Length: 180
Image 1 (cartoon, helix red, strand yellow):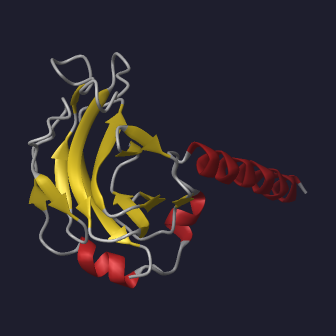
Image 2 (tube, rainbow, N blue to C red; image 1 turned 60 degrees about the vertical axis):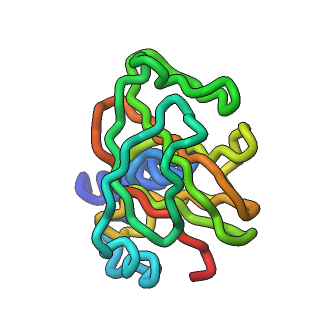
C-alpha cells in the first residue's frame, strides 16, 4: 500500500515540475530522459554538422561577426560584470551581477518562425531592433544533446541572441527555421 501511495504522489509532483519547466523555460523536464526518439530530425541533422566556435560580442558591437541560421555554433559565457558585458546602449542588455553572458549577431534570411536550440540550461534572449522579442514556445523534446529549444517569430535581417547562466559554461546553439 505504501508503494502505491508513492507512485500517486510522484505523478502530481512530476506534473508540477513539467509545468514549472515550461513556464520557466529553463528547467529540464522528465520527458527528456524518457523520450524514445527525437521528432526534429532535420534540426538534429544540422546540429551534428561540425560546429564553429565563435567569440561573443558582449558589448553589442555592430561590427561583430554575422552568423548564419542552420549552422551549429559554440560560444563561451563571460562574467556579466566584465567590461562591456552589459551590452551597448542600443541593445540594452540586462546584466545581473554574478551571472555569465554571451551575445552573438546573426542574420535571418526570410520572415518566419525560428527555433533556437541550445545544449545548456541557459536563458535565451532574441533581440531585434534593440528590443527583446517574446518567445512563442519552449520545447523540451528529448533530442539529446539539445537541452531546450525556444521559438521566436522574426523578420528577415540582422538580430542578436543573448545567452545567460549562473556559471561560465560553453553553449552550443543552432538557429533553425521551424518549417525545416
